[in-house]
Length: 351
Ligand code: SAH
Image (cartoon, rainbow, N blue to C red; front, top):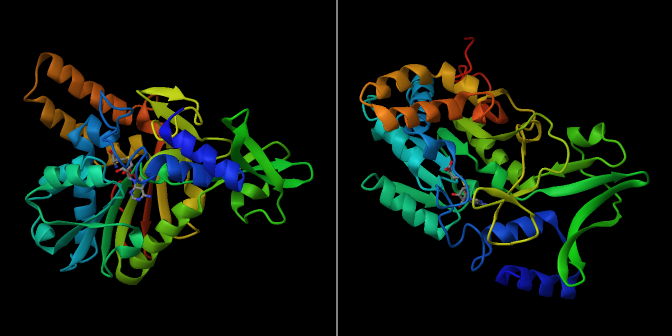
């Protein structure tokens, strides 16, 4: 039993079963034993890898796309360049390097990183030095000014509730104890199920997920986009109205039982982009299409010029991994949010 499993078992013995959202929040961000609170989970020695860690091209193209959008919106003299959940800081470092020669962009940008983990904040500080950066605990702390933002594999880490449709109504999936071990169960019948598109056409046995924590963050972002202008790119795996139980645990690059190692495995859920965009103006495509439209092939060819042998092979493999439909290209989606009347976001123009 992990130390966190023992703490959760005590809590459940005293107060009864907890929601999947509470379970996820404790597993990921418990101050002592949370997965993100005390480790750097990325890379070959970690539990998983992400697009910016696979190739510098990802952060470079996202950075240039945000700079293009900033120019298209009249190059505001002061704006927030923000990232939600920046991990090791690699995406932002690549974005800042790629945009160095965009006239006025760095001078106008105030870089704000929304990050919960003290360990990862330290990694970000080292990676981005000497560039001035400030950290925020939540999206509610983002400054009131135009906002150009990216979030890659952030929303999949935010807690979800899971509901199951039974013949007599909806029940919430809970984490309780069976024979002393953590086990899933169901609540009593709920008086009221959340009112969301995914709930409307569900039938008996279906599991539907809801992430109020994600909506709360997006509303903070939308509020600024609407009032001050800007653009937000959300990149993650998931779909439009995703359905079913998508809670998953990854440990040392392999799937794990989500209840087996609380605090020691990464826990995620697919992002439901329809619920996330809250009916606001948006554009939506796959990661593969987005990166191709932003010109990843030209950038890849340019970088390939200096490479031979194994280095060239791994560069080409990274390009495939990011864009190929059999790899991350179609599992990962990109949602672009703007205020009403903003010019179309880069990466979504007709090809
Ligand atoms: N974007 C990075 C890291 C993705 S992992 C990449 O693509 O490599 C998720 C990141 O979100 C980590 O930095 C984690 O510490 C952070 N995070 C998770 N939950 C958070 C929360 N509730 N508030 C702020 N940051 C959070």
